[in-house]
Length: 267
Image (cartoon, helix red, strand yellow):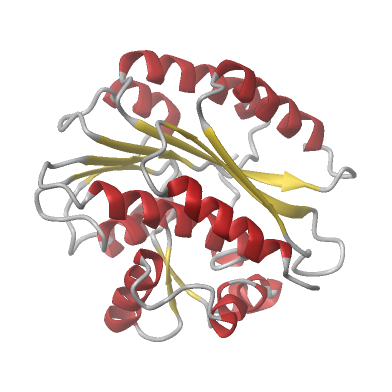
């Protein structure tokens, strides 16, 4: 249950999709003077070294952010690139931010951060990597914590649900949780990231059923799905999805743009 280590996958194409959309949402939210709350259920360690042995072993960063930067998908002014540049200035050219540091580098002193991480080593690293930004970190189950934290103070803001999907019951639990949170916090942006698997992967039917159920339950939500070549032979993840309740202005356009770019990627 606690075996997942994102260092093997940091900076992959799914991260590019997820973090570009996350940065777009936060960029919109921070344009107004009002404070906001940013929450995550599965924060990870927040910071990764793409020259680490684990990252180089899988080749996912090379096929991901490193390739995308060569293709110039994002201008330097894009909020995703602004966050990435800030992290590299602080930690070196091989550094890559997880969602917590993408958010922390885009949020303002008036904003609140609440992050959950259950893995002991990842939580300790998260404490170190977020020390300069403050925020409240919870060494607890993120899904239950999210239910307890909503509606937050400030009430305006967003929640990112980004599990490892190792726990198969999450496919049934998370849609129910989203429904509960939406009833408690009807103004909040609730974003769920999920992998898209090849049909041969055992989890593929559960993933499809979950997304179809979310579509039926929340027809007003934005769903962005992109497909991409596998990072290596036999790799089962062939795409990335983001489900967003109460999507902010501009997100649909960015999701469409990313979809067009991903569609042009060749193996």
